Length: 530
Image (cartoon, rainbow, N blue to C red; front, side, top):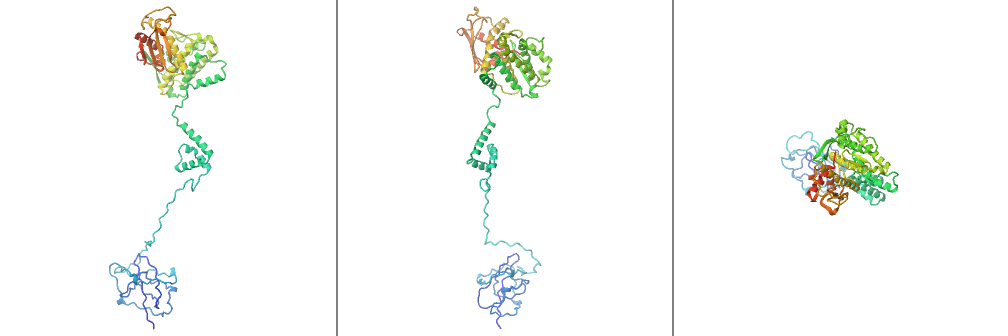
């Protein structure tokens, strides 16, 4: 009977330890077939346990792992109780690599025949628990996973190119710098090889520049005059507006442009009217509507002189101040804003158009017709310049009340207004002397001969030089007879002639006879009125 050689057994895996595959021993001398043992066998004394899983009691025999040729099957040996060694507490002994069988050539193991771990002895004495929770197998430390490659962000021009129509629709947002970085890069790359889109992008970028202009968006006050001049240069008007009426036509149009967009609250904005009454500064509080009503009733003096209806009727007072007070008394809503806002604008505007239309159709004879202002009278040509200056003064009053900028008149119109006031100064000086408000004349001369003269110099585009006779309105002014000089800019002249600053506070360069200078400054301020 052949000797039974016990087969080497691998120790049972500890709970939670991954079982290791069985290793086939290398071919050698004939051995007895592996015999199954009862659950929980221990290695023979002196024999080291082999690494690998121990088959459990329920593991089925592998058909391919039968007895090798030449081996004689025998009965399964009984385990020797005396030879069983129970492990004590402590670390599990390490297997000896030298004693482990090395795998040799043989058939590939069948996964179905792999032994399953069964219950084995625990690390210490005591009964083993009935069931142990299964744990997930830990990955082998010897086979780390390769690092993940980061994914690149998709770009419009790369993996997902944008179509031509979509890129063209983005040009507006690109011009406004409202595209994302990817869209901006795609659009700019597209513009390098698409001429039509590049031209459209240039137009859109120029249009965006207009949205951020640093200049005022208000129309140039001289735009109307330039347009009319260009039209009349091509085809003269059949009935032209007289030159002396052009200033009033332009200033009334500028004031109307200031009023056209006003709301209800702006029409009731308080306005302070100022003038110089000959002795001291004067003023009156009203509203924007009250200012336009004042202009309308004073323009009514000129309208009545031309045969047009007077807004106050036939029994209206003659002086501008009396007419204004009468209008504010009978129409309190116009002065204090309790009436319909802006209603007075239409009345004033229609009356101004009628004035210009009438003098245009009347011919040359109408220019010398007198317009009575109560204590004095002016020819129609000078009355239109006077009303143009009043439109400018009160337009500035309204603009300051509503906090809106307002430009001075055209240089040609401004120069005509200054010339009117320079021509009125000799008569005003004589009237103040008669009232005891000015010094007596120093040297009287015959009418038409040169006498003492004051040089009035106004700087600016509408300025110039004027020579004022001091002792008599009938005398002739002469630069050789100048005894004093007053130099001021057009803004200072406007403030002085409108009565908005006292004469002694006027910003002017003065030289020469101080008495003559004082008389002329006070006479210029006295030209103002309500």
